[in-house]
Image (tube, rainbow, N blue to C red; front, top):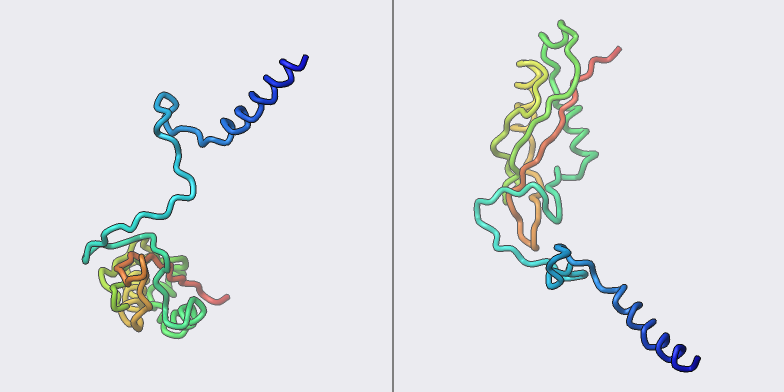
Length: 153
């Protein structure tokens, strides 16, 4: 009985320790264990690279609320779109450069020729944005913005 108890006392801690090991990525390769809580690797950033995901997203000066105010104040509903009761969203994509300027402005999802042109005009007339940040440095970031066209009832 004492031998069985001693054996159990030695085996139980080994099972607990083994159970806390990370599971391997490839079950056939035990050396490929998942690394937990490893620091992020610093990636060399190309001068012209365009990012989609960054630590700090680009931002309109003053934040999202100011962006909505800017769009509402400056949007000129095209006459042809009003006459044809065209309503919806135009998705505009552009690059926020390191200095906050906007380049590569184009329509990603169209509504009509007139609303598309107005959405592009709005973005072109926008003030410089606060650039996106990655690894503590300003970087070029691709951004997509919906411009809403809605007629009042």
